[in-house]
Every structure is written in C-alpha cells, then in structure tokens.
Length: 120
Image (cartoon, rainbow, N blue to C red; front, side, top):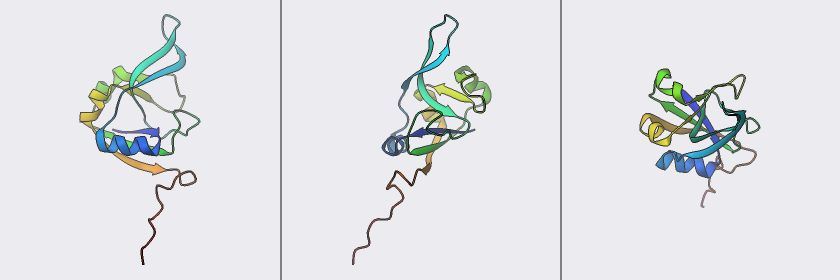
C-alpha cells in the first residue's frame, strides 16, 4: 500500500536515512468521552495532503508499506478528512514494513533541487 506524509525537507531526509519517530497528535475530533482525540505514532495518508490540510512542510514522502488493510485498520482515524484516509501508526510497526522515498519538494521554498555550482 502506498501512503504519504508531508514534513520538512530536513525531517524527510532524516526519515529516509534513519526511519520514522513517533509524534504526538491532537485532533479537533472528540473521542467517546468527549475529549480531544489524541494519538502517538506516524501520521500517514492515502494521498499527499496540502500543507493547509495537515502538518506543514516542503517535502512529501512516499511510503510503501507491506501491511494489509486489516493490519492498518486499528490505526485508522475516520472522519478527519472527507476525501482522504488517515492513519497514525506506531513507528515500531511502520519502520520494519516501509520503504520510504522523498516524492517531491516545494521548489518555491526550497533549494533541494538546485544543482551545485560547477567548478571551473
């Protein structure tokens, strides 16, 4: 399954090199007790979100996970987005099952794609 995460370029580079770290997330949606919904893990969606929809950042990671829909079901948060699926999965589950690459970066705010100067 192909999933996505938006983050900073520095964080994306570190994730590709060393793997994901768990983050703490709080959502406007309420849990059954009426408290704000909170989760700890890696925020992943089934499509690349804009930075106005989720966490901001100039890089989008493409995360190919070898986990079934059934395995991911316990980590899915329904009703957060009307047109995207969202999971918050513990890093210890994602890392061994994931292949991660930087899908794209925002060229307007980044030097990431600039070629180094040619020495004469």
